[in-house]
Amino acid sequence: MEKRIITSPNAPAPIGPYSQAVLANGTLYCSGQIAINPATGELVQENIQAETKQVMANIKAVLNEADMDFGHIVKTSIFLSDMALFSEVNEVYATYFSSDFPARETVAVKTLPKNVNVEISVIAVK
Image (spheres, rainbow, N blue to C red):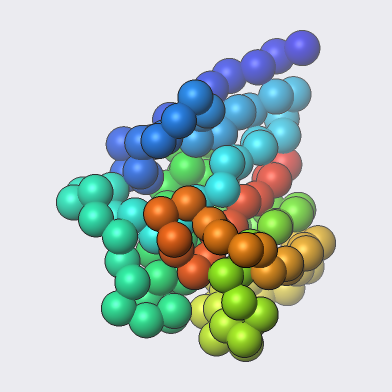
């Protein structure tokens, strides 16, 4: 198996024993991203739209490091602190895809790292 660890300086550094992403046999498995601004290390939480945009920017940075973009994503997992946030998160999320949408699940969970409102992980294929 061909396996390579992907690390982008333009996405937050892992806060535990994991990698930002692992590229294995042409498939990129990205760890969940939360709304940490990599330049400041601070959470972006003015509102759920800004939080979601930062999450997507972090995902984009990891994808770019693997020479991929949102068109390569085949699966996303969205974790929310409250399903009442779904429509606002979905509105921002939808702007990153135009067709051939990835498979996806969205679930509400009791708590997320650093008490954020949204975390998103993706799987992309070259």
